[in-house]
Image (cartoon, rainbow, N blue to C red; front, top):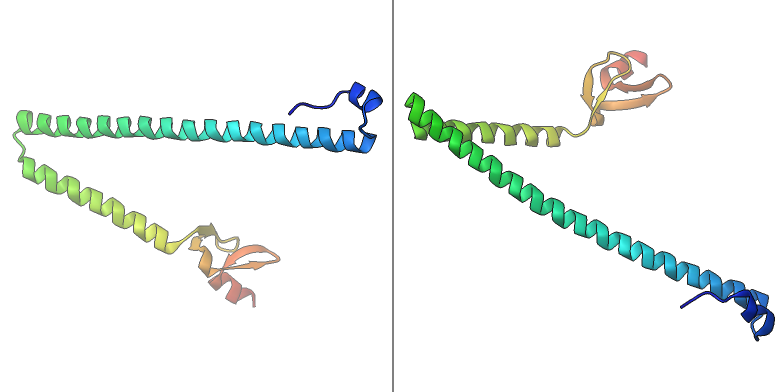
Length: 138
């Protein structure tokens, strides 16, 4: 749909109000079409990023495998020991991540400047303080 020109309003059977409404609707449709194209471009970028990240993960896996083979071949290290250590490091990283997620957001106390979970903070006139500093203020 295209906008009405001044000629349609001046010589046609369209009132000024209808002219504004129709042209406003056309503007709205064009904005929606533009947003739709923009959304499609964003989705396409996400798909490309996903593919690029999958390729990067494959390269990292290959790098780890090659480095492991180099350690086994040149230093005579036991491959199973390296595998166990790698698995232990991965387990440790995952446990650390779970602990961080369980703890929740961490905030610096304005009173004692220690980092505390947000669940143990209070908002005061002096800023966000931990439960201990809040108890001392009361």
